[in-house]
Image (cartoon, rainbow, N blue to C red; front, top):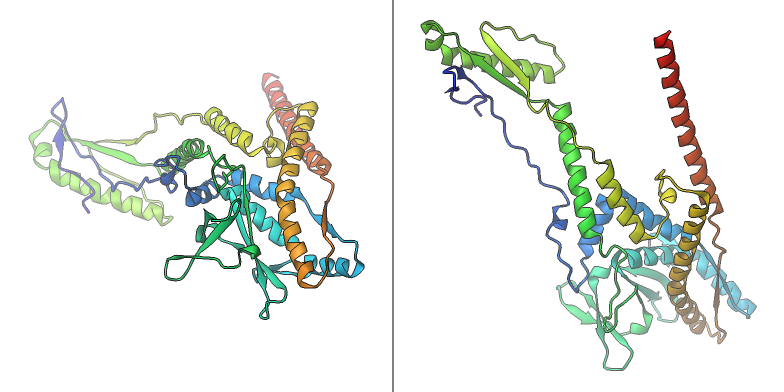
Length: 396
């Protein structure tokens, strides 16, 4: 590839040589958000891209799942109680983990991300008991209205790419998050964020490009021949020589070698874009993050954001979060009861199981957030005192 172009004359009649470079691929890795339009079907890959591209959203969902907390199963029959305790602790979940709480955590994660969650109670070889639980990928399931009123039919995508009806739908666990009237499927908590996150991606992508240009600067080298006939006659050859030497010097600089550039004549070297200022993105980024946090329902101090707040405000935000967590618990309780009661029926027990959730206590989370805020404020005060001491010493 030629690193120089044909010389041209400027307005003063002087000849100059400019260097060209290959254009970078500036495509945003999350550019699919730019072409997003709200559809009736859930955009599953879109929500995955949002979680992947904005770590604070991914962290908020994981934190919500953890803050929902654990639960205890109880039954009046002592033998049934022993069975429930053993099942809750050692049930196989997808061959990757053990415990009913592990299944519930994956179930809730899918519910928050996609607006729908699907699970399955896997029977043993004889079909006489539950051998495990499975969090089914939402992309492989279709939900349709059944011929019977107030019932649903489930279809699974087989190896041939066709959807076949699931026979024993009583073993299927399904929950929809905030479904609209007349809709079978729910809505993700990320609904409404594609537009906001697309703006945030553009800002982050431009920040990366700007700092790449600052860290890996480009040069504009201009050769201006003198007015005599000799310089004009050999202007092309000298420009080619300058281009070769400059390219070699840049190559050796990339390898860690320092090489001076020595030439004869009027050579002008400028850094491309050095006179431009980097746009301040603090305000627009915060505006986008405020919209995201308002949608997720997580207080900002729990996500490590040291925004100015008061103790009363943080307490109110904690109370609001508690109500959100209790709402998710009410969605999960029927699923847990269905699993436990099915287990009891397979083992010949007629008693009903009950679920008791652990008390939600965000005191530790709040105290940790306050401690982090106090440390940040202390560092800021120390920095201000140090700057004031330096100014005083300079005056003396």
